[in-house]
Image (cartoon, rainbow, N blue to C red; front, side, top):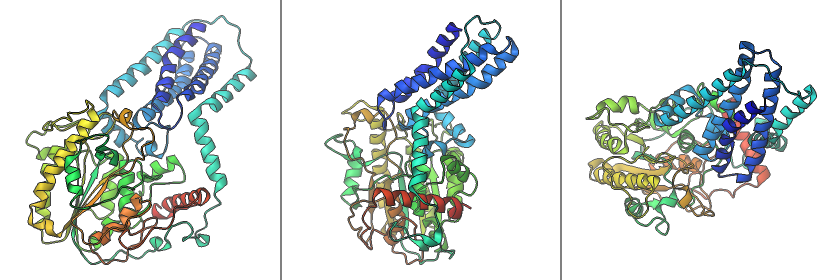
Amino acid sequence: MLSLRLLLACLLLPSVFLSHSASIDSPVWFAIPGALSVLLLILVVTEIYARTPAGLLRFGLGFLMLTPVAIYLFAQLLSYELQGSYFNQRFFFHFNLNTLITAGQAFTRVIVIFALWMLSLWLLLGRYARYPFQCQRISTGSVSCALLLALITDPGLFGSTRDAIAFSLATEEFVLENTDWEGLNLKAEALDDAEPAGTAGKNLLLIYLEGLENIYTDESLFPGLTPNLTRLSEQGQGLNNVTQTLGTGWTIAGMAASQCGTPLIYNSDVDGNEVDFSSFLADVRCTGDLLKAAGYQQTYMGGADTAFANKGRFLSMHGYDRVLGRNELGPLLADPEKMGGWGLYDEDLFDLAVGEFDRLAQSGQPFALTLLTVDTHHPVGEPSPSCTPYARIDNSILDAVHCSDQLIGRFMDSIQSHPAYAETVVVLMSDHLGMRNAAFELFPPDYPRKLFFLALNHERPILQQDEVSHMDIAATLPSLLEMEHNLSFLAGFDLTALRKPAPLDSVAGLQQEHAIATINSSIFSP
């Protein structure tokens, strides 16, 4: 029995220490209660295991008890390694079959490690299932207490439960008719059933930069890393105070919030995943819906599979005529086998986008072209083969950022020489802040991390604000295009027209979060 417990501890405990060493929002010493929790679980499981008759029944029971524990620990490790945090809405929005298949193509090594880890566990259970145990057993009451203590000492589980209770206690039941819309910095008009309508204005070229945040453009930290973005910033208007808020911290969340004016906040993490694959913001009115009503042709192009995080379904529901990802764009390459782990390299995406921009420009209709880069995807990045590495610091993410800068510069040179550019507004923005990646060790601990945002070729100036969010970008885009329209955004403010209200205090912020979660769950996603 003792040897089984030692072997299980050697197999399971490393995942706990690796998880908390990768955390960016909790201290490393949280690994101690995490390890205690696992040791208590091992005690509980092995006690039950030893009391079960030897043979297939014992193996089956051990399999049913320890397999979920191992999957939980590995998923926790994956969550910390990829985003530096315990399970959250960002994690659950990606925890589905389509997304896992796409991610599996980029993380083949992780899948192999997981398979070997689970196989080792099952072989260990099989080895000890055949022999009787001679040991002094712990009382049933003690086993029950150990199980309860294991659940309480798990820092992630305890923290999530605590936060859920605090959120529930801090917010009253949401009643639509009693909502203080102005006091919560929300707009009731966004819930109107009126179909979006507007007059066409300029064309739109919207480029989401995967995890490419403002810190990479700081010359004092990374000199010469983004010369083309610096050059373009001198031609347009940038914002240095765009903040990532709750429900905007991953790609589809950033895209939805910056086009629909609401963050992806739901009444529970799991509900968020269910909404994602049922009626994902089906009844919210987004920029894409407005552009469609105004006669725009709209195309989305991205190197990854459009099924990843359900981007394709979301965009198709909200006005996009063509949604092109890995499966649609791959056959158009001279070498269809030339793919990175996530899909097309950005160099091929931008080359194809030049042709799509020209096709849309020749259609005779106003148009919107949306692009999403992928070379800078965490955790290590995957620069396009044609790029020159960053010379000053040997770092894979910085190489990818430097590569994206080169490709953006080349792409924008092509677009700016096109006749249609005169009537095209260009917006380059981060989809979200970079998740935990190979460059994090180079970030100063107290650096105020902000999203990158740059608008080019627009007439209406953006008023400087104390703080800007994804949702404000959604409300501002139609004005940059010089459209007249009837659309209102739940949590966004037009930055060309007025100054935003002051940020909410902590209590009102929780009330606003609760209101948005309820609206998203029951009204925007019925």
